[in-house]
Length: 84
Image (tube, rainbow, N blue to C red; front, side):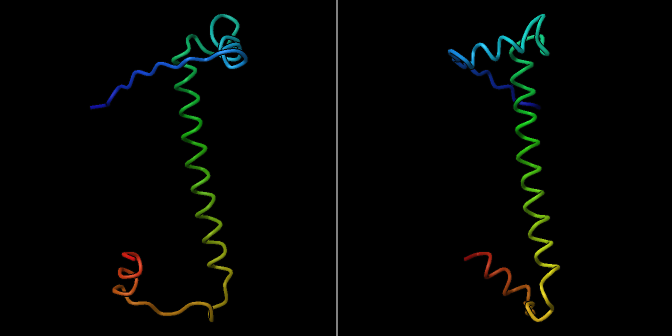
């Protein structure tokens, strides 16, 4: 079952005007809830993309390293290192 969360947000000044400009007949969204859900989805996608980009960068560095930079590890060593 999906949990629903109700939020109350107070906006003033420029933020309120920006939301108003994006909602309603003149905006891209029918209502504020639709706008906020889209902002959250885009923020979530951005955070996931940043994580993926960091992983790709780490893998690129690992694959670019010379073979002499690698050292053999046992599963027990890796487990112990990750517990620390």
